[in-house]
Length: 168
Image (cartoon, rainbow, N blue to C red; front, side, top):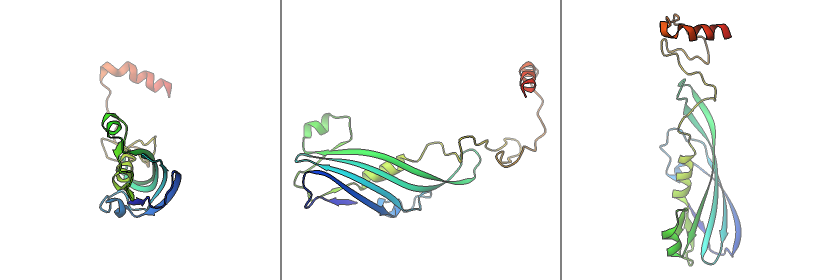
């Protein structure tokens, strides 16, 4: 996605986009099917551009613990600066890119796609207290109790088991 800089004077400018995942090269991503909302705040100065990108979309995932499907709102904010100062670009650890002050547009496709992919949590849980699946019988412990016979406790842990039983 390219934002036209033609006619934009110095100062802060707001843009709002609603696009399909294909716009960001994510048409084959299995979890992203809903439109992606993008709000861009662009601050233009003579020698740099500062962009604040705010994305939102609904993702469909499989829980890592219980394997049930669930939907989750993905939301993330990212910032990137474009500058014509090559020394600043090379010496900074920040997200700074080179920029031609006479450019007619700025391409934010890669930045938004990366931001969107980074908004997906590494551990996908349908809820914080998901109990997962029973290792013995495979039942979803969020929906029903385990059908396994209670396992014998190792005698070395018997005292701890008694404490646990007494606390119930």
